[in-house]
Length: 142
Image 1: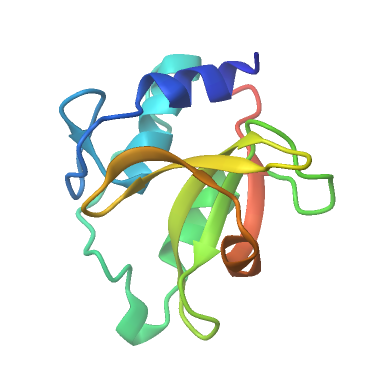
Image 2: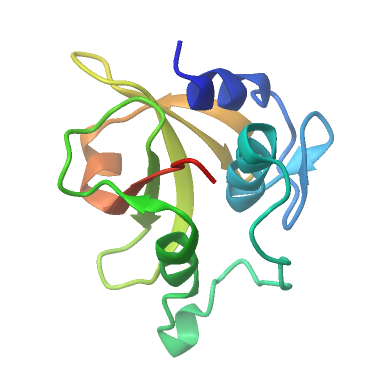
């Protein structure tokens, strides 16, 4: 099994807690990706600033997209693959502010993400979710 997916699955059941990143105790979608990074690469690549749930949406800043581009490898031109990190726009005209990890591809694609009021779950990567993908990335070598 892909190491990214295996680590993401270890987080399933972790409660949703904004700005947290502790497996079993609480995390948000970024906290899940941060925790996977730590498991694979050790220390995080930058100190985490405080952030709000709207991710600078009123100002239109692509804060999360810019950070993903700094620390992850682009995968947009490649086929979707297990272990890729997906960045979503929750509305077509909104900033990208939700993250998930592809856990399965093919006839029944799935992804793992931390979702408010649900915690870390593995969900079908249904057509509505696919339409929201703003970018895809890979963890690389750290």
